[in-house]
Image 1: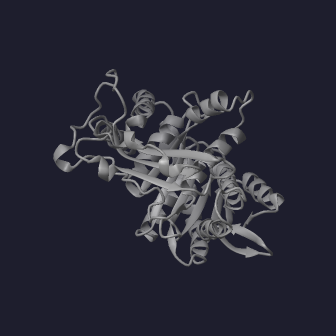
Image 2: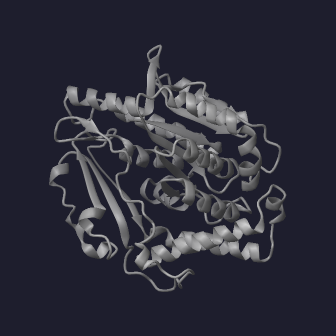
Image 3: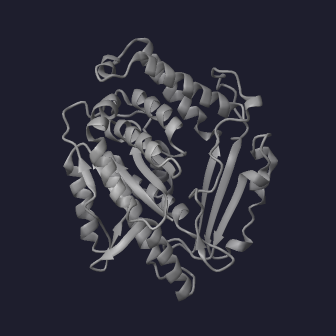
Length: 398
């Protein structure tokens, strides 16, 4: 089952490169703590999943690169070639920037329809190279213009044309003190639209990754390159195949294998409207957790704590909500590694904060004209607020 990656905007393209580089490095690592046969099977599974057939001995990433200007795409293509280990095909698209680069409406309402045919044709060509399409991995920021507006538009098109294929959006949550004045508008419009068209949203917060670089890695001058490499490492450790007891590597249709449902059963839907977040929860209640353990002594690891019913919502038993994947094949050069992917209340606070900030701006009509001139009406904002407030309420009432 192959995955086609769509890299959008500066953020999406830079992270996409780091992801493919991490996947390639891991699959070709000779210190995998496995036999030669197992390492070869692992490498073959990774190649089938993320790379096309080799061209002159160099694997080609299954990816489409999209941006509003050629600079970042050219830099990304060049970095891959310079690595001399893998490269991108010439499946890229750029649109000449005409101002309004940080405006979600411009990416969604102008660039989306204008370049829909060319972008979707490139994606179709990449899909045709897959023996079996597993789905799409869409990497994008939610605060800027291209990654959020155009990315949302493309995701909706993928839902229309490939409704039976998984569409997972990897979105970069902006810094709380970002440089884009309208980032909260862009964020709520992105999240509300993706809620309707994406099968799963995988979130990385810039602030959280920044803390990892500063406190765990002791990096003094933190760059976006440092942040992107941490994100790529975390994605790679989860997306690489796990080794089954039958002796073959496998994936599931959902690459993360967990329940992404964000609302309780209809009989228990909360009333619309946010509850006060002043109440401090003792812990985050989860819908689902996935733990991926790799390397030495994985089978003796104690994961019983994740089966505690108190961690999960009352309407879902932990036996159905918790998965653990283990493989003795180490990730990269690490003797042991563990990754946790959780669908929990963790994002309630940052989501509520973004919605509140956007609402305060909207109430004073700040910058609204920058969106209405491109066809996004005030009713669209109100619909986004309503939907996201219900998402916050649903997670609060797990």
